[in-house]
Image 1: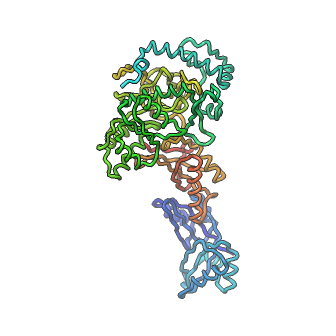
Image 2: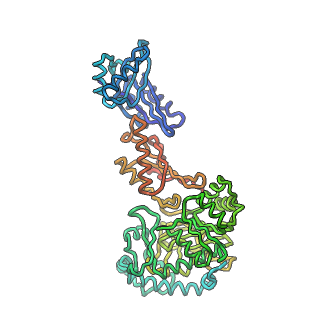
Image 3: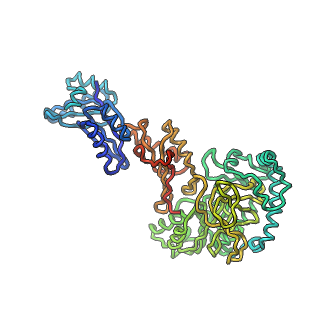
Length: 143
Length: 432
C-alpha cells in the first residue's frame, strides 16, 4: 500500500507557508516530512503527515488548494551509495522519478526517502524484489 | 492651420441646415439599401421621410457594435461590392471583428477629414510625416497616409514595429510630424535613449496621437521626452477610422467634423440624450458615408460636448478627451480585448468556468496585461512542471486567439476579490 502525500498550492508571498502549517497545527495534524518546490510566482508544499484525511479536510476548509498523491517511501541504507543503489533499481526498471525528498526517522536508523515515480505499484514491486525495505503507511505516518 | 475654412468655420445655423439635409438623405439611404435598417424601421414604425428636424434623431433606434458583428462580413454594406474600393476591419479577434467598406467617395471623405486632422495638428505641405500607425486592416495607417498626402506633406509609411529603425529613419529623414499611439511614442523615446539618440536633436515638431485613451500626464511626459507638441486625435473604424475629431493648437477639446458626423451624448443607463456639456456616452450618426453608414452608433466612449466657440476660429463642436468606456472593453497596445474572450479561452483549457482576473498596467510605456487564474483542485498538480505547462498553454492560447502577449500567473483560490458575489474581472492600473 502506498503512502499518501499531501500537496498544497502556495502563492509566493510571505506568510503563506506559515498559514498552511498553522492550519494543520490547529487541526492537530503532525507534519512528518516537508519539501517545498518553488517558482517565481508560486510554490508547492509537499508533505507527509500523521493523518492525511484530517490534513486535507483542514486545509480545504482553510481555503487552500490541496492535492493527494501516492508516493513510495523506502528506507535508505546509511552508507555511501545508499540512495544511488535505490535509484539504480528504478532506472533499470525504466521508471522515471519525478521528484524525491529525504528525511531522517526519529529512531535514527537511517534515512527515509519519499519518491514520486511514474508507476507507483511497479516501483514498489521492483524495489521489493531487490530487497529494499518499503515503509508502510502507518510506519511513515507515525515515525 | 485650418484645412477647410468653409466647412470647419460654418456658422452653427448653416451647419445645422447642412446636417439636417444630410441626415434626411442618409436615413433614406440606409432604409432603401440595408435590410437591417429597413426591418428595424418597419418594426418600429419609423418613416424615414418624416424627419423634419435634427431633434427627430432621438426617435431613431441605436446601432450597436453587436449589430455590425452579426452582419459579418458584408451584411451592413449599402452598396454592391463592385462600388466598394476598400475594406478595413476593427482590431477585434477572429469572428468578432467588424468589417467596414469604403466607396471611392468615402475614401475622398476620409482623406478630407484626415487632412483636417493633420492640419489641425500642425501639418503643412512642408512637413515630413513619420507614420508609425499600423498599415493593414487597422484604419490608423492608411487613414493618416491619405490625409497627409492630401495636404501635400511627404509621408514615410513606416507602419508599426522595428523601433530602432523607426528612430534612425526619424533622424536620417528629418521627420517633422510623428503619428502613432501615445504609448508607442513614449516607447520610441526609451529606445532612442538606449541608442544614444536625443529626441531634442531631431526635427520633430508635433505628433498626432490616438487609437487609445491617454491622459494629461502622459501628454506632459511625451512633450518632455520627445520634445514635440502632442495632439489628441480620435476615431473608430465603425465611423470612418481616425478623422472623427482632433485637437487644435488650443488643446481644449477635440473638434468633431460635424458636417460628416453628427454627435450626441446619451445617458448610457436611460439612453436619453443629455444636454450639451454633460458627460455621457458618445453616439455618432455618419452623415455622408456611402458604403457602411451607421445611424446613432453607440461608441461606448465616455465624453462630453462643448459648443462654445474656440479661439482657433473653428465653429465645430469640441469633445472632451475620452475618459472611459461604458462597456468592459480594454484596449491593450491598440488591440480591443473583452474579458469574456479571456474567459472563453480559460474555459476551453480548464473545462469549467474559472476564477480569473485581468490586471492591466503600463510598464516602460507599454501596456502589459496579466491574467491571474485561481488554481482549482481540478488543475492543481503536485508537480511544478505540470502547473507551468498550464500557465504556458493559457499564455499561448491568448496569444494566438487574441493576438496579444500576456503574462499568466497562477494564484490561490479566493485571491481574487469578489464583490456582491461577482468577481471583479479587470483591474486597470494604467493612469488614463
